[in-house]
Image 1 (cartoon, helix red, strand yellow):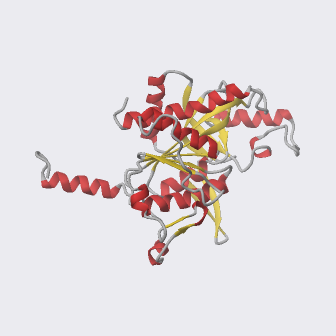
Image 2 (cartoon, rainbow, N blue to C red):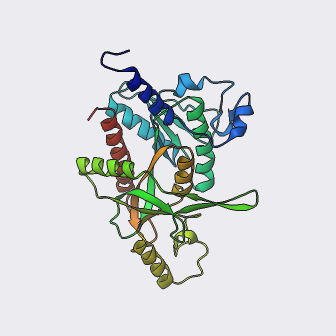
Image 3 (cartoon, rainbow, N blue to C red):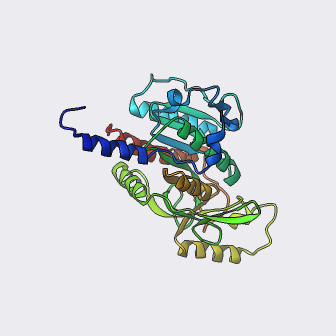
Length: 313
């Protein structure tokens, strides 16, 4: 035992670590000899999860495989891990569903687009972290969104995800019955991320509600889809009502992300940049270079947060 650390203190620390282990809300898994994470092309019978992932403390997830590879390259350089220009192999190369990259204690995983895609990924990610015996893990979704009442390029840290009726809930039909789950996110983590943005001081960042919808067009009150049976005035009334309800951006994954992380006892956050102000239009018209720079903003913010947590700022 290290000098100055009492047996009581050690017991408290061990208990604290135990309390921060990943929680699985599924007793059936205990009866399974092996667990195949099909969409990751990984399994407990074929891979040594604790050896591969046991040191993971931060998981960043985002829609695009290329964006998540760019993030792992960026964070590796920021933390001084690996050599300059190093290539990071896709751990899930056995499948084309998702991509996964790792450097040090950071895991970067793509989740595709929409609630169904991210939900499948999260079920297998949570099991991966559990089988790896990870503790004190923080999961952050970084992505893009449509802003409401914000200038393009603003970053929104989600306080809670709300549905298309502005309720902070995720609704799912299970065994023919409607189940409603909470979509609140970690308030302290949101504040820590906001402080990091102030320290960077490079772009506008706000904490607000994020509306999670089931599609990109009608569900987000766009006028430019193949189908639109409402007037522009109705669209603006709806988006202004969303703003009055505290909504500052719209995307398609945050509700189930919050719900699953809550049930798994994982500290989680959503950090998305806005590509346009939906009160002023529906189509993303900024140049490619501008959009690339916007998409780097959540990476910079989360990268600073991870560096700060690891004492490298």
